[in-house]
Image (tube, rainbow, N blue to C red):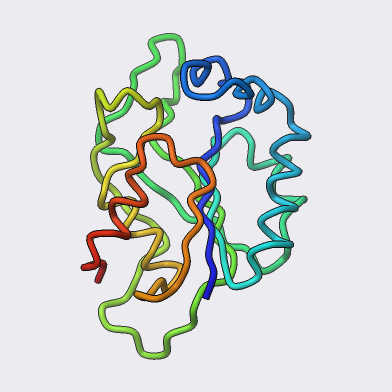
Length: 166
């Protein structure tokens, strides 16, 4: 099976990635994100996952197929924003498709929790446990293909290469 994971610069945050990509500011446009959803739907019918900002769900979800599921990564440590009364301590992951496994043991929850990565040189780099969670939700198995559309720190590929996912 062929899967994809996309963790693009979040809407309005393109400048944080200037040092990694000359086109990072394109992600300050909603159209660029909506085109990504179209690409995921059209090119990855087996399944895909898309990380995004909670405030962007209202305009991203209408572009998604009715088969998606919104999952949650809850951060036990997060950036504190003093002027924000309700802190942002989670990130949604839009999940579509994946390998179906009846009577799976252990079960996979549609949420995970843990610490964020720090000082990786890549803003928003995801930790290993998060990457394993994405692969588990997709039902990834050795021999499948996973296209990491925004490799950044390459942490997803490192997790895939470890070979001991589940």
